[in-house]
Image (cartoon, rainbow, N blue to C red; front, top):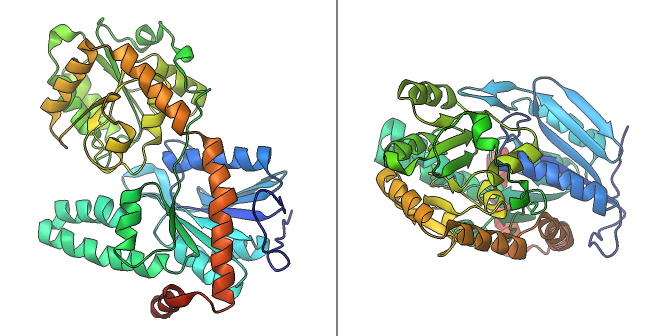
Length: 433
């Protein structure tokens, strides 16, 4: 089944005119088992587009082999890719010709690139062959700092890490100037792009399903089901169990809690640290459960609502969907004062401490538990209900950001893009050449 675009005939896109379009999501950061924020975003966007718009949606992601599934206006295309070393739930597409073939076959009106490596340039090359294509990028992680610098510093030292970060920002500058619009998840990342001369940007807050994630999902028998003893707080974390998320710090924090607190903890997720952490917790007889990745969103909602405090040691959180889901479930948050966490957990909704200070995190857990944690959790939920929701996210994306990208693309085609477009064309030709 082919869903051909109408880009050449119609530049209008705003929700009010509802002209059907073929939209495309393109990402490496997808996993059906263990997927994080982008996997959630892809699922929620699919549901919104199909339920609330006349548009069709093509989603291109890595998979174990080439497979295209068509259900009505939704095309889900998996491109065969090898697993990422050390992260078995993720795969990395290197077969860009297969991606180009899918794009050429379906000719999407708008391509939204959701990761920084390889695939953005696949989209750029496609647009050069089909100039009517509109390119939007989601700059969801300040990857030169959060990923490249951290890994480079740990492997080669601080000086080398800084050099690699500088090179990565140069790559980001060259890449994202090719896009008609780049959105970030917060003002900090937008300012980081502005310092590199990338100013065709917008901020897109993500959302949470506050009906699904709700205190009404609480199950008093959940703790016993996990086999966890104690009558103190049940701490919960949901996300990847890897070095980036600093999952090992949660075990160190748990060891620092006073035994009389009667705490237990459940770490929901998978990743390369899961097996070592399970072995460590069992060896020391810690009251910690590792149920693995929860694919059932209703079961995840039950787990969160049945816990007492949400904990995260993640220092480079770019938005924090998992934090919002916990807050919607009525949980206070204990985290670190870094990344997007201060925005998600303002004063009165939890406690934040220094990065990697597990003793301070343990003290904050005890302090929050002995405070009126139920009232704090209720306030956290009220904040989420008022400010965040997937409907607001996609209404803004489709009703404001995409139309702006289309206007920018029209200016590019008409030669009216100004300094930004002229400069990006020059540096982009160097990379693509």
